[in-house]
Length: 264
Image (tube, rainbow, N blue to C red; front, side, top):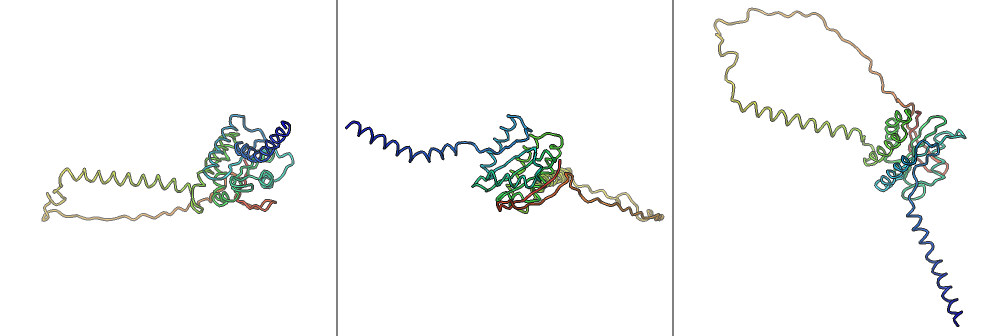
């Protein structure tokens, strides 16, 4: 009788384990932090990688987008755009779902090329033009070998740009804010200055106060016209200092993206 009771208890425990184990596995997976820094070229030390991971996790929560850094020595000499596309397809990045919202910075150390790509939500909010701006901003630091600072700037700028609607230039917003503040300051200054100057009394003396109209007069005047000189200067068109440009595409898995490519 005791043996039967024990068998029944064991079966009940086994059933509970089977029922609960999927939930335990899901909880364990959810608790495990998502990896977003893939430094295969070993450009960063452990502390720098962790700092970038922490920042990526914070930004991901706020923008619902994965902020990925991928560095590689590219021993197979694959094109940097293809590298990025295959990496996205393989790793299934996406804050909201596999193959979802993500922005990826790929560093090809073999050919010294960089590529930025935005997928889904990031494709809309980080279009080719905005990715060009980010790439141009971080390229000088990449050239100097200051990789941690460059990756940090990429994270910060991409996060900030995603806070603005498409079609808006985030850099102009910042400039206009300071410009409007300066204009308001000068207007206030001149108003106060005018009020202070007016408080000293009204001036009643003018040019005719001590002049005798009967005896005063202009003897004569003349103008000597010499010449007019016009100087023409050609204004050069702005150039892309980091040797690249915008251009997205579509992965082998059918996921379209924005993009910006350049060298460093």
